[in-house]
Length: 58
Image 1 (cartoon, rainbow, N blue to C red):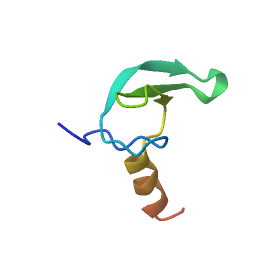
Image 2: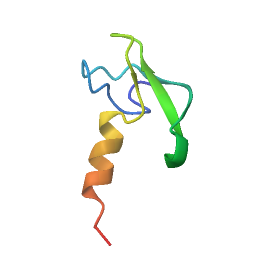
Image 3: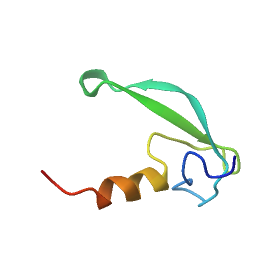
Image 4: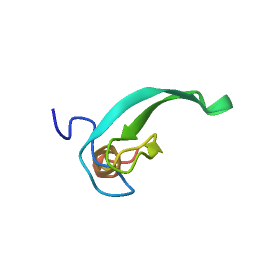
């Protein structure tokens, strides 16, 4: 499904897939994503960042 995990922050493509986990030390383990167009890894695709920004602050 295109765009299921968000968009690539590098090229803007919606061809982002899950690609394992990334250990951030004390910050914990984060899901890692791979862009199939530019082959960059990210832990925060654009769609997820937009959702996080739109949530009300506590």
